[in-house]
Length: 151
Image 1 (cartoon, rainbow, N blue to C red):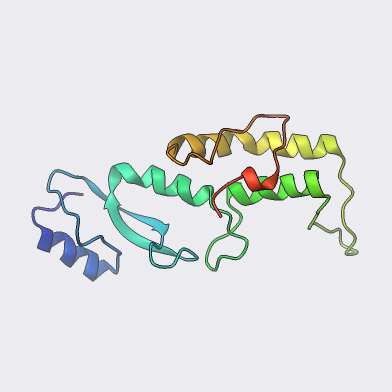
Image 2: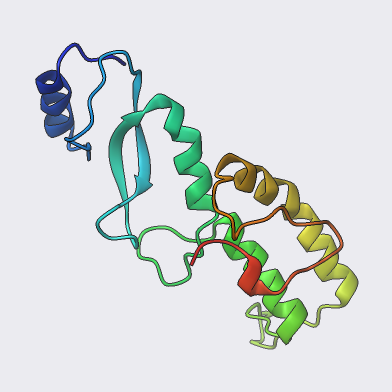
């Protein structure tokens, strides 16, 4: 959606309860409503009005964020990958069977789980590629959890 004036976009954002960067306005830009990480409180997601071209970036950024202590979203691709890496490198396994006993997982199962998620993770890294500490991960090579996602 496009807006003719700065006042028009601000009015729309206010009426719809959307976050909007009031410093930025360009009449040639196509805007979209989407969910982003709140710039004022990184533990929350908010609805926002942003450039349509930035929507894929914001979605990928969410998927690359470690969210184990975050309030309104969790289980991102980075969370899944970090969990696999923790179990592989440090023997940590949070999953339990119905008796409360940790599942026994062998290395092959962890590598298979890793490989199932790797393409989605790498696609998100390519979308937000400017973070130099995030690199593409390889199948069959589980890296330490510290090398995964944004904390």
